[in-house]
Image (cartoon, rainbow, N blue to C red; front, side, top):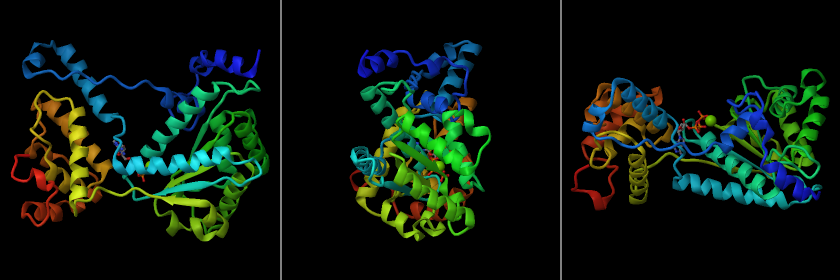
Length: 372
Ligand SMILES: Nc1ncnc2c1ncn2[C@@H]1O[C@H](COP(=O)(O)OP(=O)(O)OP(=O)(O)O)[C@@H](O)[C@H]1O
Ligand SMILES: [Mg+2]
């Protein structure tokens, strides 16, 4: 059977799905596979107050549970910032796919403040790469190995080179990960990456690494080794990576393309329109018996200062409260009772004054004068 014939047949039979292995976390290939291939969740149907009253106690509890789960796990919104980021990532990734083995591969780093959606955007990209390459090349390689286009590793406080390589081996469930030297782990990891035809390695929370420390220098040299020897694109994610010293190494500085994500801003009309269109997109997704006519754009901006992480948390908590109390409406008063992260709460009062006094507005000019 030709390799192509073999991969086509194998792709209909994803054995790993049937194995009783971890499919919950992204630190292992099975978990990543479940995440990447999960079907889109069904949007719970909206019920009127009368329909809610007609549900029995148990049916209502199940329906409310479905709605709360939906709000807590909404699929990422394709904002302009995320689209732009994906465009850059695709360019870098597609070029790295075409580079010859002897060429050092490109790398990128998403460097932005916490809660702006770095991990979410990178995982959406990774999911796309996983599904795209499996659809194109099959679930198994020509040599008969499982194909894993993406590998993801999360850094912790004191990740050293050996720990990093161990995490790569853990992702692939390599049998040799229980003992060996750092170099042995590195070569075993290289073997996994080449056998599984991995094309993208994501290193999340890289801000934990202090590049000027001994282990930091060791690991940044190791990243260069990966770029030289592994046929993959490296994607670093973190906050203040420049400040932490990622680019102090001149070779890495020449290889890594810095990318970012910004909070929503309302200083100009374009920013206000983007904020408004995000709220409209989210409003479509929230499942309550009573919708407000247009989301409370100013209130939501004052509470979140345009940070998508805080916004999603606020909406999730507000909907949970509206459902639990039977209010079924996310009102100004309900929003004001929800507590948020420390950074959002710190900036809240200042922004409430600016927005209420009219010094600032989050409403686009064409909507001024209409009710929100
Ligand atoms: N595009 C998006 N659409 C919907 N929700 C999003 C989007 N981006 C981020 N979120 C929500 O914001 C929260 C924070 O996002 P994420 O964890 O990706 O941020 P981060 O920049 O990686 O933060 P950290 O630096 O703390 O790791 C997530 O829980 C996610 O639900
Ligand atoms: Mg993150």
